[in-house]
Image 1 (cartoon, rainbow, N blue to C red):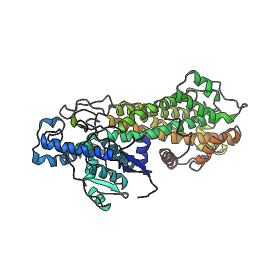
Image 2 (cartoon, one colour; image 1 turned 90 degrees about the horizontal axis):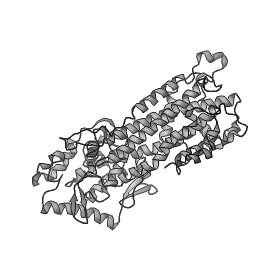
Image 3 (spheres, one colour; image 1 turned 120 degrees about the vertical axis):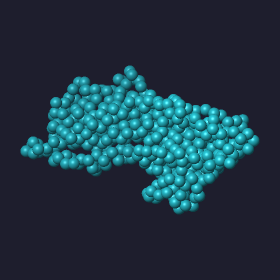
Image 4 (cartoon, one colour; image 1 turned 120 degrees about the horizontal axis):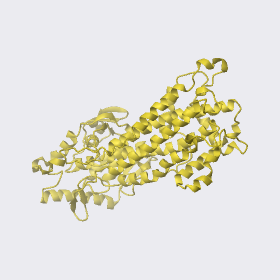
Length: 520
């Protein structure tokens, strides 16, 4: 282990979304609290369960079947096998496998929940779960199969399986059996204690982990779409007066005002002698702060909700260590996360729609105020065979349409399942997956707009309608950074490689934009 590596401590202070993302991106490693208070609480929960089992012999999920099978008694001689059966019969996930960073986020979120001390698990389980993160042993978790209550049972069964040396994991960039990966780092398969499979699997950790990842991407898209709006305004000879501070003091949604302030700052260098093409620009420019600002203003609420869920005990039953009581409830229900996912995905899709409209103005000679058709930079004698960004604009329209289609809320599609025991479920994991898909599509739209606005401004500079000094330092620096990845398009050329590179840059939050302090 690198001694200089940042560590995130579990079992003391609450974790933030950024803590989860740092662990997911391997910019930090986990560390279990060494405090006596933490370790005593964990041990007390495990000891109480042992004593309860020994003295009373009847505990849900320990001496009973699961869910609707609660009335089925498990004889003492089979109690030790029951956790294995829970982990195994839920091994039916399908669909794409979560990416390694997403799987790491799942491990981090589940570890945070178990460290609250309400689950009755052993210190050994916490150490094994922490070790998966430390040594970067990532379970191969299928993304489909959860209805979001009784938690993310099926996907989390792949975490339980990795801990006990079953199924497959990724280690050292190689897919291999979990037992082999554990052996390579000197770990033994975990022997699950009573209730431990239930504690691992019965919770909201997959949906919460995916939404922690979604949160930072949405945060970055807020800033990037703001900068793109500034560049689109320059390319379209738009009116900077639409972003006047006084306007947004009259309708003072705080983050909306920050979006407008940032655009105004980007456009300030245009100068007092700059003449916009229209008194009032079309809505995709004039109302951009009102579109971006809704997402920006909701981000603090989304953060609060996700971080409460992240730091919660969300399995069932829970253990009141102090009172030595078992509490039966439904904290595995992912309704809050589902609402965040459904809300966030709608607002992100609106960013795609906004940028799609901005591109439509930029490529069309009826609306772009003197720029060439489809922003082709071809010479006049070759203009007839060159088509510039025509196909890219079609792609943007397709990606935007798909993003908008996927905004149907998942949380209202509850299904009664598991013999009507789980008769009202959250669909939170489906909502989170929808949100990630919409993010990906919107990032693709943003990549296309980066090519578009860079081309439009280059054409304005080339025709001397615009001077480099009118761009200002921040805008000039950003455009210079884009030049390394985006060619000037004079002759038609495939742009898929450029688009993929730009999408990767966006997902890596590659460019410094406005800083994070005012976005969440």
